[in-house]
Image (tube, rainbow over the protein chains, first blue to last red):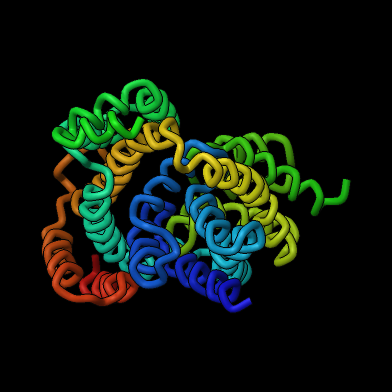
Length: 192
Length: 185
């Protein structure tokens, strides 16, 4: 029961302070889920994001379900998700009921212009941490840079990119891993 | 059909078919606006503005907003639950399968490639936020006319603050919001 309450509260807190969607939530997830509570590792979090990207639904919800499920089964998945959406229901309910012009208020716009700068920094910090988990050599480093450029400058959908990466991984990751790990390749061969 | 059931089913469909995050839900909402009188395209515009300027996942905020306009607080809850139901089902199924095959070579290989791609996608999202914050524009129609030196200074200050101290990121977010108001960003 304790862990369920903890899951609900931790995700409610994250839902209440995440501005700008799933990607903006990542730095806070890293801090809370990986560093403070040890509910998942850096690599697992990245895996959940990749899966959340190409499965139906909101990325933040998918990630919450994953982490909840991993720690407390189906009930954990449901509770973490309910925690995440709880602040939205409260806050949007209040705004929709009382503050019709909320988004047009000058004070809101100024606050958000400031928060956007901060979210940019936080995502940058998050990417630097993720780099360590994802990049094992020159090839994987090139893939990070390339996928960032494709996503920023073209209309290729991220779903297509994740699916293509999965297929490439299925076909070639063994060889790339061998090339990147250098000396260890002989051990890997023995493992098989 | 009772209104709440319609809300639940419509948002269940959005949650099931919108792949790739909050903005992917938009086309479905426009379809809904064409189909029902209780949702208009003007409301969708308001909804985007509010979803972007309130905390929480965008898709969830949109569902909450539409649900509220439709049937008040209970509509909020029903629409949001409809939206997240497919995620919970699909992710639990996937997590279950992954647990079983975690040690398989094939799964490890797939993730070996997924991790760099996911990192790249997140980096791109971060870049677009930074471009919006500093130049007040997007990659698609980039121009330097909206350049803000205040934003650059705040960016540098927050970067140092978050890397040199151990404060929770929430603290940095709160400080930035206050600075945004005080200095008129």
